[in-house]
Image 1: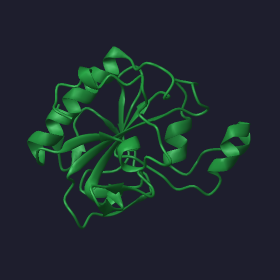
Image 2: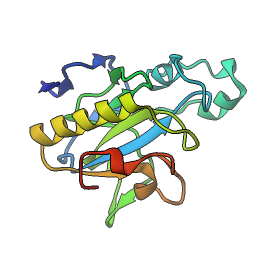
Image 3: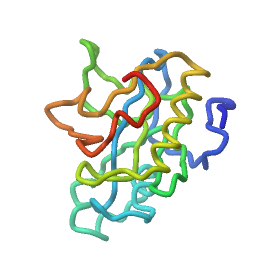
Length: 174
């Protein structure tokens, strides 16, 4: 696994329209979890959301996502498959209203990684394996970035990656 032209070599690249130009270097990696509907795995709903193609009428929980424009740099499925939606030199729209160590708008200085899952479910071994490889690649290519959860940058709104996420399984210092 390596990064070539700001893309992960073993990820499937599917360009999301939901990004902006990066004006600050990425300094943190923010971990999230997502599944649509919650707890339903192995479908293309997250992909469709990040591409602005989600049929909001296909599930009652999707109504709140009407006109929502979001993305992440990477999405790691439970199988370990990796999809990249935004190159690392661009800003993905994943953190929303956020603050980390006194700095607002964390999207501007972060890389967002979504894990297929919920805050209530354990994550798969393959997801931890791929996540560790990705973090190693990002740190080698760019810098020694700190790894935090969405809950760390938006504590009043978010809980992900959740209590079931095992930080000890990351081969890093958080």
